Structure formats: C-alpha cells, structure tokens
Length: 294
Image (cartoon, rainbow, N blue to C red; front, side):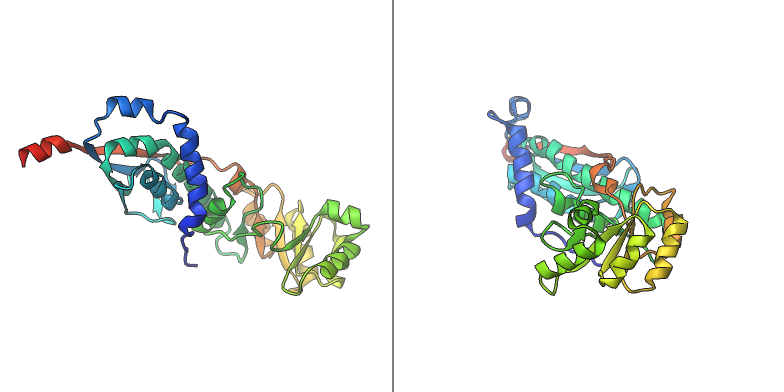
C-alpha cells in the first residue's frame, strides 16, 4: 500500500498549537539569550532505537513555522525502518530556529514513530495470515489524523475516523435498542445506503441476529482463539470479521490463526511508547564571520 502524505492543512493546526504552547508569552528565553542571531547550523535527526519512522512532515513543519529559512532534507521517509545511528533527516539554517522548534519537532516525530513502530510489531506478529492490523478511535485529542497516518506508516489499516463515517453498534447501543437485531434495523433506517454497519458482539448467540440483519461487519470482542474460529466458520464470508480486546504481540498470532479479517488494538495510538530520536549537531558557522572573510 502506498503511503500518501497528509495535506499540510491537516498538519498545521496541531503543530502550530504545540509551538504556541511552548513559546508562551515571551518566546524562547534560553536560546535567544545564548545563540547569536547570525549563527547557522547543520543538524541531523538520528534514530537511537530500532523502529519505523512517521511524522517527518509534522517535524519539518515545526522547524519551518519557527523560521522559514530552515531547510529539512529527508533521508529516510515515513514508513522506513531504522536502527540506532541511522540519520533520518538533515536540517540546515538559522541555529536559533532549530533550537526553538527542536522539542516540538521531536515530540511529534518520536510519538508518531512510536505508533508506527508498535503497529509494525503487530503486523510482523501476524505475518503469513490474512488478518490486517487496525487502529481504533482511542486517539489523543487533536492528533487523530496524524496518529492514524502513523498506523498506516507502520503497515496497518485504519478503522473509522469518527462517529460520522460509519456505524459501529456497541454493547450500550444494543442495550438501548433492546437487542442486536433491533439496533441494526434502527441504524439502517437512519443512515444512507453508502454507510457501512458494524455490530459488536461478545456471545455467539448474538451472531445469528447480526447475520440475519445482514450486518456488513462483526466486531468479535474479547473472544479466545477457539471461539473466534467458530464465529468465523459460522459467518462464512457473509460479513467482515474483526477481533478486538487486549491484543498483544504475544496473543496476536493465535487470534490471526482463527481466520479473522482484522485485528484492532486501541493501545497502538493511546499507549504506544515513544521512539527515541535525537537532534544532533553536525556543524556551526557564524554568518558575520563568513561574510567578513568574503
């Protein structure tokens, strides 16, 4: 699957908000006091852990928003696997802007690379099976588009982006409606013909209702491998099958062996560990000194 970049318009708001939060009311007191305005530098974004890169567009934008004169040359694009010591990108330009934007840039890059790396770990765990690794709506506020992009960078696929692009009938919806069948019928009557309907079940007796009402997808929640395999057998291709509930790299292979189409995990976005990436100085030069010498 080709990884298409997000439009800058979608990235700018969270990056700008993060910079404004960091700059506060007086800007970068430390850098402005210590670093001459004429100083230019070359730095490198360098991996300190093995993982998968994601978030370079957000990191690059953080540098450019602080100082448009900063240039970023990407050497290992999003989706690349890196190991400690690998140079991900080279940054050149005014040193002040680099230092002011450094933390925000690394926050986005490290977090999103962590999401991509976690996803890649689950993808690798089910290699050889048809199951795709899928994210959820358990994302950090304001970062959903970026986090879901990072899941794609790690080789996963996206679930719905919000409440408005698909129907997912969960246990509380079923309780409110009075049953699986009643919930599906009400949902189908309330949405357009292009909207897919998925229903969550945690017992096989609910499955017959879901299939009778021709649900497009069935979310099989917190079922063990044997129960999942039986559910997949009964569904027999009549609906997309998705397994969820405390999925880990250790449990994912047995779940994938049940034959489900998708395995979803919320921790990919809400609890992924940051990938350690640093900004390392390469060269410094003072513009005044260079111009005087010329």
